[in-house]
Length: 324
Image (tube, rainbow, N blue to C red):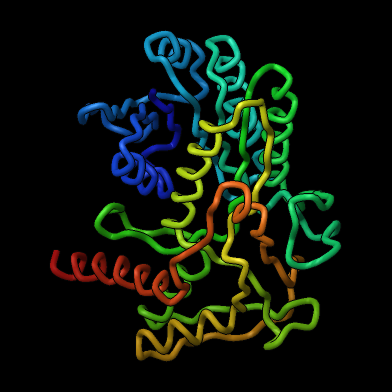
């Protein structure tokens, strides 16, 4: 049986495609930035997840076991000024895929959701648990919550789903992902230190160990594994289910800790200033016990290993640019 994977050429999708191939799980990968390619039972197709005719043709020509929906717009700040665009790309795409799954009898769905659904105002305890109230602080988080709700409402129509709330994804397998990493604090911070440029970090609004914000970072290879584990769990479920799982490390890293670890790994000093706090949560860390018990998943890649992979990626591009 074959799985449909959207966003297959992206950061997470590239790692997932490698893991699915290694596990012998056939897939059709769709992405606007893909190249039409067929490698054995693995197919890559250029396509738009908002193109109903394109999607309908895919479902007609393939007997899908399930859908893995990774494709998404992800800039939380930009989402607040591009509401229609983010709703269409993140929510409408989910709805189209779910409706086609129902129409063609595809019963399994894995959604790439986000810790952004929690927001700050409703955080009652740490670590963050799936059962607590959610209220996103940005429109990106709202689109992910809306997508989760679509799947929740589809359970009675025969859709079994797992929504994976990814925390801060970091790291890279440089033998698989051949592009230059972009975005995320560890990457931007490493770039600034390598280039000797000034940068700012911010105080936390609330008391933390070193006065800066605490975040949960999980390696992209562990994220990919959580999707594979979700596939196996859905395959073995006899009844329709709708689960939401946190995917993080379960550990906190402060902004200042990350700066210091990168300085140590690079043997360089960062030129930074600590600024007044911003309107953001002081802490965000996942309770991952549900993922551990339900899909038998736990993170295995150490944070320092993730940082080293980031530096290897950035340095390889830095060297190639110098040579050219």
